[in-house]
Length: 308
Image (cartoon, rainbow, N blue to C red; front, side, top):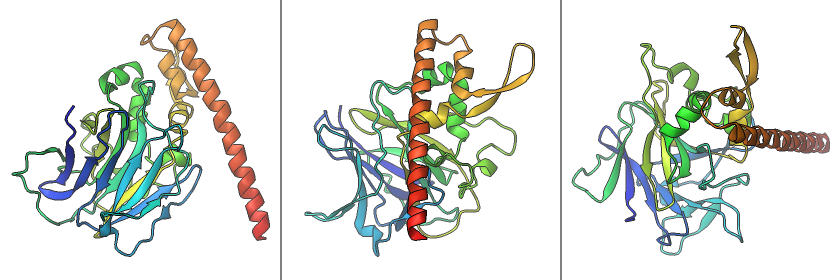
């Protein structure tokens, strides 16, 4: 497969590029460049309440590189200097996972947000070397990574409630496990105000092994001249997608609260054997998530006592 850059534009305005830069088909690496546009990077760690910000004087001299995990290193997201011999600054995000053939659900990777009146360089439409991704009327884009063989329509048919939740949930919820960080007013603006139906996620291939699915919406309240890029620790995204309770109408017409994944298992979209496997997997996810939550809370308690 020939690797191509993806040009991100908004109504003709040049936003940036997603660039596959490792030609080895066994590696999925790519980088993100916002060209000459100024931007900031925000990060949500697991169970955090507020984002951490990267502070570099001239962000236009840096781009973002993604390195999948290997036998010798974990997944890393770097800030990469735009030089022949660049300096690398790893983002302090450690609980990261890569998409594989076995991933059932898209993995939250990045959100970019742009002010409604953002105006910069016009994209050169004569360039035919790029895959074109136009945000059009939207100014918030949430990027989810999947394996290249992932089929979103098949996923949505198999897990209709979970696929809907993936679209409407706060992006950072998949790290923070709380609903109090909605700085982009997603709950206010994601659902069309005219009662219409929102289109399914956009998609494009990023390299030989993975592709992106993108949720788009418009938040007219966004201000500022910088592009805002947000990354999260996504290790427990599957658990935080499937385990939280939802209202489910049972056979007697009564609403009961059950984990989102169990609503999926109540449908005739998979075999009994597969349902048993998913029940087992989500129980394992719950056990691991609860252990890690206890560890983080215990660590936070110890640190707070040390400060006192």
